[in-house]
Length: 164
Image (cartoon, rainbow, N blue to C red; front, side, top):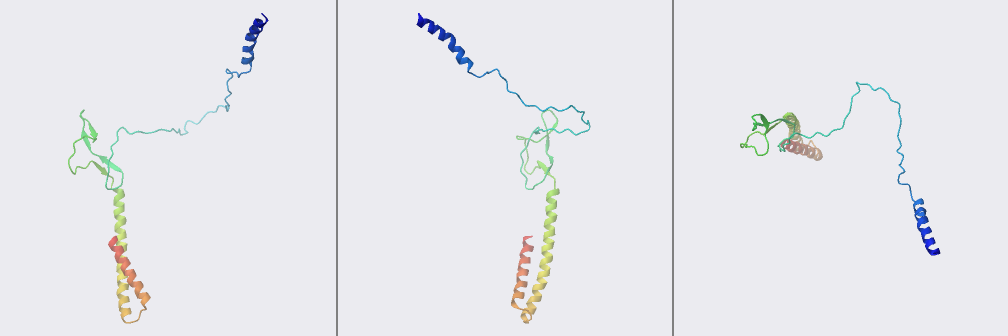
């Protein structure tokens, strides 16, 4: 009987001992906040938003030159309205699908022409110096290093003119 009382006492006391040592799960963590005084903001101040812009449709094209697209070929859609050409539309050989703004590559053409003009002017100057050096060298009025320099300049400017 004493054993039964001891078992009964232990069965009543032991659950309280184990639950009293655990953490309180109902306890909430405190979130730090910053408090500021409310103020009136200027209505004319610009508002800034972050956004991602996705195109309505996209067409992948390759061009021989760099630049911005000025115009994309349009065809009549099933509803009768004009739409830009899409994958699967019928095209004819040499049909312009898009026009590239010529500003960038025209600037490169102007730059190339100016480089060519500069190379031609340099070649003309070095040709005259080369002819003069030939005459002076044949008369032994010019030393070999100066003659070699004139020949080198002539050959270099000739190559630059051809490259331009």
